[in-house]
Image 1 (cartoon, rainbow, N blue to C red):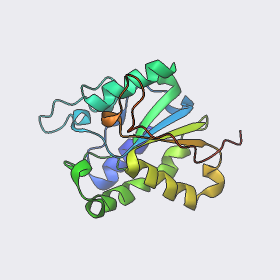
Image 2: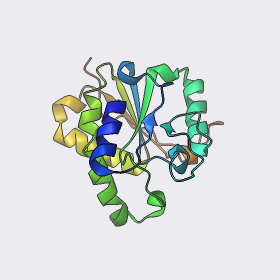
Image 3: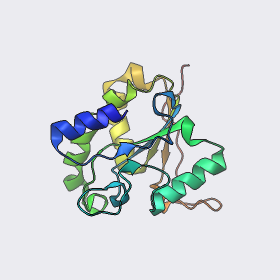
Image 4: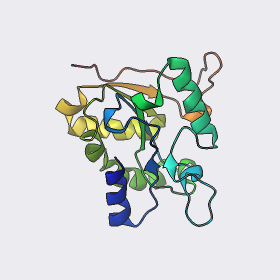
Length: 179
Protein backbone atom coordinates (compact mmCIF):
# COMPACT_ATOMS: atom_id res chain seq x y z
CA UNK A 1 0.00 0.00 0.00
CA UNK A 2 2.83 2.36 0.71
CA UNK A 3 4.00 1.89 -2.87
CA UNK A 4 0.76 3.66 -3.83
CA UNK A 5 1.62 6.44 -1.36
CA UNK A 6 5.05 6.79 -2.99
CA UNK A 7 3.45 6.94 -6.45
CA UNK A 8 1.07 9.71 -5.34
CA UNK A 9 3.86 11.65 -3.62
CA UNK A 10 6.09 11.39 -6.69
CA UNK A 11 3.36 12.30 -9.17
CA UNK A 12 1.68 15.14 -7.32
CA UNK A 13 4.38 16.44 -4.94
CA UNK A 14 1.85 16.36 -2.11
CA UNK A 15 2.42 15.10 1.42
CA UNK A 16 0.57 11.79 1.71
CA UNK A 17 0.98 9.91 4.98
CA UNK A 18 2.13 6.32 4.85
CA UNK A 19 -0.20 3.58 6.05
CA UNK A 20 1.03 2.54 9.49
CA UNK A 21 2.53 -0.93 9.86
CA UNK A 22 0.01 -1.59 12.67
CA UNK A 23 -2.62 -2.04 9.95
CA UNK A 24 -3.07 -5.27 8.00
CA UNK A 25 -1.95 -3.93 4.62
CA UNK A 26 -2.74 -6.43 1.83
CA UNK A 27 -4.24 -8.84 4.39
CA UNK A 28 -6.82 -6.31 5.62
CA UNK A 29 -10.43 -7.44 5.48
CA UNK A 30 -11.85 -4.10 6.62
CA UNK A 31 -11.29 -0.73 4.93
CA UNK A 32 -11.90 2.50 6.85
CA UNK A 33 -12.42 5.22 4.26
CA UNK A 34 -12.31 8.83 5.44
CA UNK A 35 -12.24 12.18 3.62
CA UNK A 36 -8.65 13.34 4.21
CA UNK A 37 -5.80 12.94 6.69
CA UNK A 38 -5.57 15.26 9.65
CA UNK A 39 -2.65 17.48 10.55
CA UNK A 40 -1.32 14.86 12.99
CA UNK A 41 -0.33 12.65 10.06
CA UNK A 42 1.95 15.32 8.59
CA UNK A 43 5.58 15.11 9.73
CA UNK A 44 6.87 17.70 7.26
CA UNK A 45 7.52 21.42 7.74
CA UNK A 46 8.01 21.28 11.53
CA UNK A 47 4.67 19.59 12.11
CA UNK A 48 4.43 17.30 15.11
CA UNK A 49 2.69 14.57 13.13
CA UNK A 50 3.63 10.92 12.84
CA UNK A 51 3.91 10.65 9.05
CA UNK A 52 1.40 7.79 9.18
CA UNK A 53 -2.30 7.06 8.96
CA UNK A 54 -2.55 5.50 12.39
CA UNK A 55 -4.98 4.91 15.22
CA UNK A 56 -2.06 5.83 17.47
CA UNK A 57 -1.98 9.45 16.28
CA UNK A 58 -2.76 12.07 18.91
CA UNK A 59 -6.00 13.40 17.46
CA UNK A 60 -9.62 12.84 18.35
CA UNK A 61 -10.49 10.90 15.19
CA UNK A 62 -7.62 8.42 15.69
CA UNK A 63 -8.51 7.92 19.36
CA UNK A 64 -12.18 7.32 18.65
CA UNK A 65 -11.48 5.00 15.75
CA UNK A 66 -9.14 2.97 17.98
CA UNK A 67 -11.84 2.80 20.68
CA UNK A 68 -14.46 1.68 18.15
CA UNK A 69 -12.13 -1.01 16.80
CA UNK A 70 -11.52 -2.26 20.32
CA UNK A 71 -15.24 -2.30 21.13
CA UNK A 72 -15.92 -4.25 17.93
CA UNK A 73 -13.11 -6.69 18.63
CA UNK A 74 -11.24 -5.71 15.47
CA UNK A 75 -7.49 -5.92 15.56
CA UNK A 76 -5.57 -3.30 13.61
CA UNK A 77 -4.09 -6.12 11.54
CA UNK A 78 -7.63 -6.87 10.23
CA UNK A 79 -8.06 -3.30 9.02
CA UNK A 80 -6.55 -0.59 6.90
CA UNK A 81 -7.28 3.11 6.75
CA UNK A 82 -7.32 5.32 3.66
CA UNK A 83 -8.48 8.80 2.72
CA UNK A 84 -10.44 9.73 -0.38
CA UNK A 85 -8.22 12.79 -0.64
CA UNK A 86 -4.98 11.09 0.41
CA UNK A 87 -3.03 14.28 1.12
CA UNK A 88 -3.53 16.80 3.92
CA UNK A 89 -5.46 19.91 2.88
CA UNK A 90 -5.66 22.56 5.58
CA UNK A 91 -9.28 23.42 6.32
CA UNK A 92 -10.78 20.82 3.96
CA UNK A 93 -13.43 19.74 6.44
CA UNK A 94 -14.66 23.30 6.89
CA UNK A 95 -14.88 24.13 3.17
CA UNK A 96 -18.20 24.32 1.41
CA UNK A 97 -19.10 21.25 -0.64
CA UNK A 98 -18.32 22.99 -3.93
CA UNK A 99 -14.84 23.95 -2.66
CA UNK A 100 -14.12 20.43 -1.30
CA UNK A 101 -15.33 18.50 -4.32
CA UNK A 102 -12.26 19.05 -6.60
CA UNK A 103 -9.93 17.70 -3.89
CA UNK A 104 -12.13 14.67 -3.34
CA UNK A 105 -12.59 13.94 -7.03
CA UNK A 106 -8.85 14.22 -7.64
CA UNK A 107 -8.11 11.92 -4.74
CA UNK A 108 -10.87 9.40 -5.40
CA UNK A 109 -9.12 8.30 -8.60
CA UNK A 110 -6.80 6.29 -6.34
CA UNK A 111 -9.57 4.09 -4.92
CA UNK A 112 -9.21 1.58 -7.74
CA UNK A 113 -5.45 1.36 -7.20
CA UNK A 114 -6.10 0.85 -3.50
CA UNK A 115 -8.79 -1.81 -3.95
CA UNK A 116 -6.60 -4.02 -6.16
CA UNK A 117 -4.06 -4.05 -3.32
CA UNK A 118 -6.64 -5.52 -0.91
CA UNK A 119 -7.44 -9.05 -2.09
CA UNK A 120 -8.90 -10.06 1.32
CA UNK A 121 -11.23 -7.04 1.59
CA UNK A 122 -14.76 -7.86 2.82
CA UNK A 123 -16.21 -4.68 4.35
CA UNK A 124 -15.88 -0.94 3.71
CA UNK A 125 -16.76 1.60 6.39
CA UNK A 126 -17.17 5.09 4.96
CA UNK A 127 -16.86 7.87 7.51
CA UNK A 128 -18.79 11.01 6.67
CA UNK A 129 -20.57 12.29 3.59
CA UNK A 130 -17.43 12.92 1.54
CA UNK A 131 -16.12 9.37 1.88
CA UNK A 132 -19.60 7.95 1.28
CA UNK A 133 -20.02 10.01 -1.87
CA UNK A 134 -16.61 8.90 -3.17
CA UNK A 135 -17.48 5.25 -2.50
CA UNK A 136 -20.82 5.72 -4.28
CA UNK A 137 -18.96 7.12 -7.32
CA UNK A 138 -16.59 4.16 -7.23
CA UNK A 139 -19.51 1.73 -6.89
CA UNK A 140 -21.38 3.34 -9.79
CA UNK A 141 -18.30 3.15 -12.01
CA UNK A 142 -17.24 -0.36 -10.96
CA UNK A 143 -20.57 -2.00 -10.13
CA UNK A 144 -19.36 -5.58 -10.43
CA UNK A 145 -16.31 -4.94 -8.29
CA UNK A 146 -18.03 -2.89 -5.60
CA UNK A 147 -20.83 -5.45 -5.27
CA UNK A 148 -18.38 -7.83 -3.56
CA UNK A 149 -18.37 -5.80 -0.33
CA UNK A 150 -20.75 -4.46 2.24
CA UNK A 151 -20.54 -0.73 2.81
CA UNK A 152 -21.51 0.81 6.14
CA UNK A 153 -21.94 4.58 6.31
CA UNK A 154 -20.73 6.04 9.60
CA UNK A 155 -20.72 9.56 11.02
CA UNK A 156 -17.38 11.38 10.92
CA UNK A 157 -15.11 9.83 13.62
CA UNK A 158 -14.59 13.01 15.62
CA UNK A 159 -18.38 13.40 15.85
CA UNK A 160 -19.16 9.83 16.90
CA UNK A 161 -19.92 9.16 20.54
CA UNK A 162 -18.19 5.95 21.53
CA UNK A 163 -20.05 5.72 24.83
CA UNK A 164 -23.57 4.45 24.21
CA UNK A 165 -25.65 5.18 21.14
CA UNK A 166 -25.30 8.49 19.33
CA UNK A 167 -28.03 10.11 17.26
CA UNK A 168 -25.30 11.36 14.91
CA UNK A 169 -24.29 7.81 13.99
CA UNK A 170 -25.93 6.45 10.86
CA UNK A 171 -25.51 2.86 9.72
CA UNK A 172 -26.75 1.85 6.31
CA UNK A 173 -25.95 -1.26 4.34
CA UNK A 174 -25.38 -0.16 0.75
CA UNK A 175 -23.81 -3.26 -0.79
CA UNK A 176 -24.24 -6.92 0.08
CA UNK A 177 -21.27 -9.29 -0.01
CA UNK A 178 -21.14 -12.00 -2.64
CA UNK A 179 -18.21 -13.88 -1.12
